[in-house]
Image (cartoon, rainbow, N blue to C red):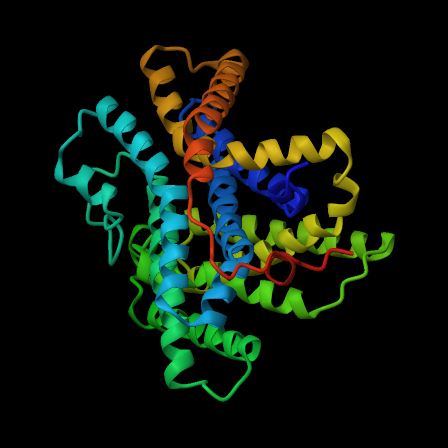
Length: 367
């Protein structure tokens, strides 16, 4: 097994893959005439929130390296690595879906391509690639949070140690975004004007980084009883998140909208801990390989499932169980071919950190 695979946590790859399919499959029901749209949409919304917290968690080692080194070279390497990981694949998917909707070269297309279609509000006239809103949140987090972390470290928290400084700044960052959302968020058009807007949602990824910092210091010892407890918490928070999401689709109550980001963060955190608690059980043979595979295809599944969906709709093939199985099979096949044929060579070409310490920065207590 290669060193890069030895450092992977199969449980988090499994969670990443499960979240991708939990977005992909509900979209089938949302576009088919079977009356399941509200429930399907709630599942999709809930799954996307897991991606946010998970991104902050798995990027924790690299962001910590930026905070420790506090130099331009490290931050530049972080950005180049993230952009090589995310942007080329996104642009291919955007080109495909823009051709389908005859939007290639339109102003909406260029706003998608530069990740500004939902920076302050929904700028696009036609939101023909709806999953792109979460990708914009991710991209702007890569820029905003490490820069904020370094700037605050230089100006406000110079006397504290790196980990304490990062925890304090993370809480400060989350608080600032929450206050902005509560103060300026549109309670009437809350979904498109707040929930899917970058400036009001980048804190969602910050919770994952905060969890990483805590997990690095905590000493987890997973027993059967502790695994059952944390998995039970995961189920409870999942039910709570789904309940809030379902109610938000049919109720204008402000408390639901205010509670949503915090309930989603708690659910994302509990999901990560629940899956990590079973990590050692997944490190053997085919289970580990299957989890890593799901993690690898998760991004192309997320990017291209709508492309496949719209093509099947146009061909009249999206009907019943047969249509769902065809949809599932085509998405998985396309995602697999795309990862190994397009993404993997780009990932292999990414620059490395000059002072990268794999043992101290990549370790997350799991047993």
